[in-house]
Image 1 (cartoon, one colour):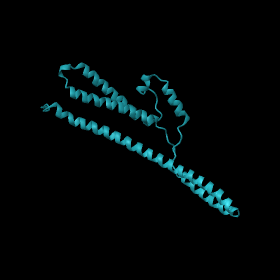
Image 2: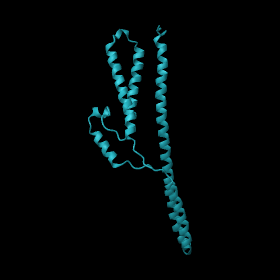
Image 3: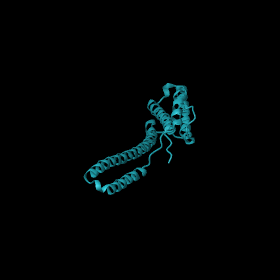
Image 4: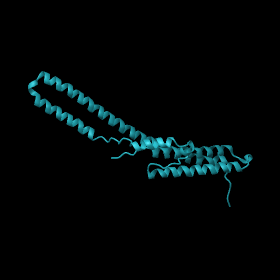
Length: 194
């Protein structure tokens, strides 16, 4: 009824490709998010830098203009006021993330005081409810990897396909570590309020 595969090596490649595609997709998603954040940060910094330079220029221009033509005080003031308002409008259009709240820093300090076991296995309450999803994935993948390791301890070593064992173990460990990393990332990311 069931036929054995022709060779164990040919059946491992689809599993490898599937795992590699999953890891690649996850890494690509993280990279895109990081690049978007970085480009937004650099745009904000560049806009603020341009506004500071504009104000410095206006300050020098105002002083020079008053020294050259002191009778045009009102006209010069209105030009400077208009330029300063324009610079401020550019700054107001920026989407500046809120500063990390003080309670989040206190929470991270409390977490740092926990034992390594509780920190590594994420045995503390996350900041937001959505952070439970990657934690649940971490707990399930860790449990599955533990069951896999127990199963390896039970089978006789003479019947082991070492290549398949190495690949499967690597996939399980990569899954556990990436799930834990993502759970910590989601939990520690500051909440931006708009």
